[in-house]
Length: 143
Image 1 (cartoon, rainbow, N blue to C red):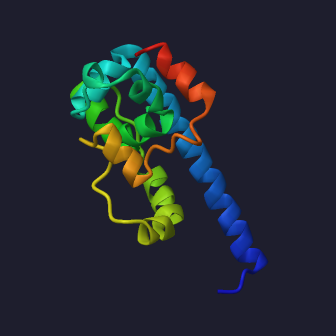
Image 2 (image 1 turned 180 degrees about the vertical axis):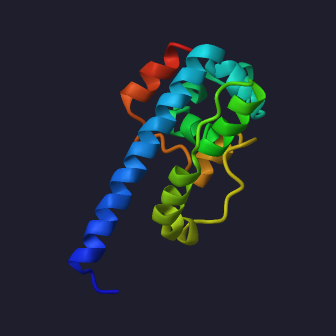
């Protein structure tokens, strides 16, 4: 596929939309973390903080929480809590377009739900070499 100026503009537009959707998703995740707490949220997905070592606790990154609290999960949680439901359909479609190649290259995944820390590390969902101190600092407030 040749990159034309038309393609480049479309790619920039999709990239900007994806960044906006991701920032919105992260903000929603942070609000849920503040309201429920990391421990309760992770336990909803079968991950027990009580059984983790101190090192494992620091290896949980905001990336993992973002994956756990993807737009689809947020819609389900908001609906179950009878809160105003947000329309994530467009954001999901945009993210799906941008992530299609990545999903094809990587191993098929059932998502982060129910993964142990070891499984998340092994699958590359958590990369202990790239976790930022900000992620660790934010999580340490709640763990």
